Length: 68
Image 1 (cartoon, rainbow, N blue to C red):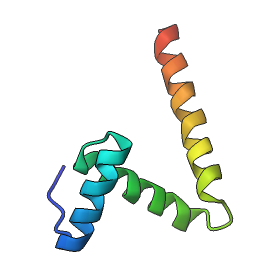
Image 2 (tube, rainbow, N blue to C red; image 1 turned 90 degrees about the horizontal axis):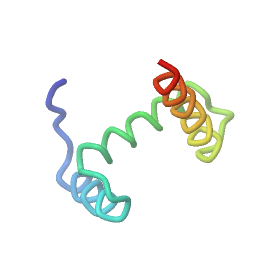
Image 3 (cartoon, rainbow, N blue to C red; image 1 turned 180 degrees about the vertical axis):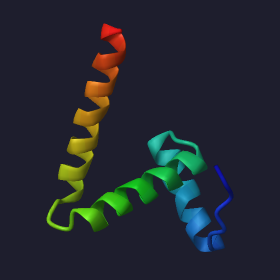
């Protein structure tokens, strides 16, 4: 874990989005970074497809934990 320096304007955008999405500012920034990373790695996928893929993966992790 570390500190990431971001522009004040981007920080304000993250703050506003985090309030709407009921996330912390850090969680919102992490979400944007993860989605951006996945979008760069999978340029043919839409945002909706990327989010669906992540939801499916999270569901598998949750069911794996429940089975343990």
